[in-house]
Length: 235
Image 1 (cartoon, rainbow, N blue to C red):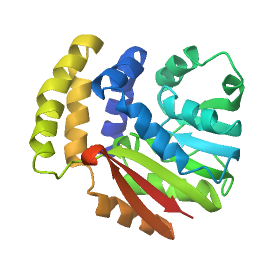
Image 2: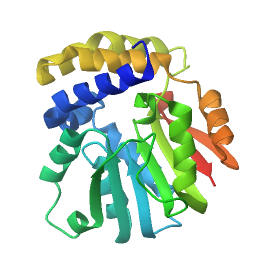
Image 3: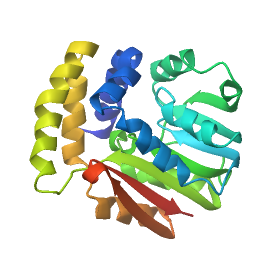
């Protein structure tokens, strides 16, 4: 993509195209390990069982569901700039009180439609990589958090283990786009996935950007041989 605005339009278009099969493909392509990743991420907010959490780049709401499953009095504002993804997620919400505790809003992660210092947690699962202006998005995440609140970023990373690394790269670049393309009908969307992971910031770079946004405490935790990483920032 030549500029941030082109990237934003491209990502929105691609996610709209695959929204109906997004959850199914995520589970299949990750061998259902994605459920564990979301569970681990959400556990970082266990000291905030009540109040509102912002799930940014919420997509089809899998992390929003885990956030409300783990804390029965927690409410989630689910923001995503792709309305089709949110609609697909709302169609599959369980028939319990979680449906009333998740509020979907179509909005931009770089201009979050939330007042300053109003939420105890901000979560972003596999969405920071898709922001056109990453630093601006991180600044906004810091802005909406209450003092003492936490930012949790769950994002794909690049394994460094000499055994895992070539296997992962082969799967990501050769196998995954073909399988996902056959199922979703959009190979380009999953070719973008592979390229965006390859081009994403190294963990220490993203932590530095979080610090630049104002987070006083930052750390990260690799999961599944470094296939994904959980980043934590405290305001």
